[in-house]
Length: 332
Image (cartoon, rainbow, N blue to C red; front, side):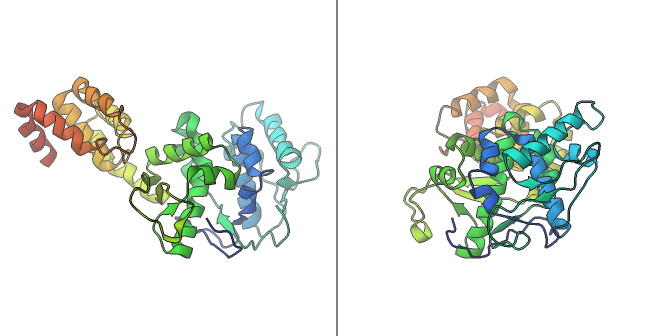
């Protein structure tokens, strides 16, 4: 991780306006976004990202968005009678508890909101920053599908994007390399939260991971051995979902089980893993494939047996009469 104050831009998937640079210190100061993490305040965090993006996009002018816009930003139903007091409570928390926004309360209408600077320096031209325009909105459906891991995944996705950009621009590497305990210490979050978020990102296909650094020496000798993380743009993941549509159409009965099983393999729910497992389920039956997947889950996560090829090999050896039929179905 960078320790100087050099400007490290963070290129998004779809280039936002140049004025959407959020100061990195919001994530490195333990009293700001890390405080929201420690309190499990996901809605407050999402509302902050939305307000920060709007404030920066508007060039630092006060913003006074509608009730419907604020509700959409933090997953509230604007038609619910409880949504108005909920938004008011979230805004007060962001102003008083987390101290990331500022406004003067006004009766019966939304106040004009500004972003509170995390320290000295120009709020609109920070030296270290991440882009936030539409950051979570574009990935909302994907993150919501992660259940209890959604908040950790959202937060670690931002960190992954920043670290990936830093590694590419400063060290000319395609991966970022940071031990879990150092991530937790630098960003003032727990190791379990960081681990949960990264694991969810891997399972969702937003991050690829090469486990450990055995017999490999990393450039710059960064904090000893750790995992290598390869950040994948959101657009690529959404395209992967489109590429899975033919498999879902061809194997409607097996698709859900294949996605669930693919998440347990070493490289997650790739198109090849999901499609291959659909084929295996259709040919050998769910009971046989499930038994082998359960057997592989007994191995460490980094074990090379946790691959589609290993599952295929066991099934073909165990059922040679069905192997030719399964290979032909894969070629069709």
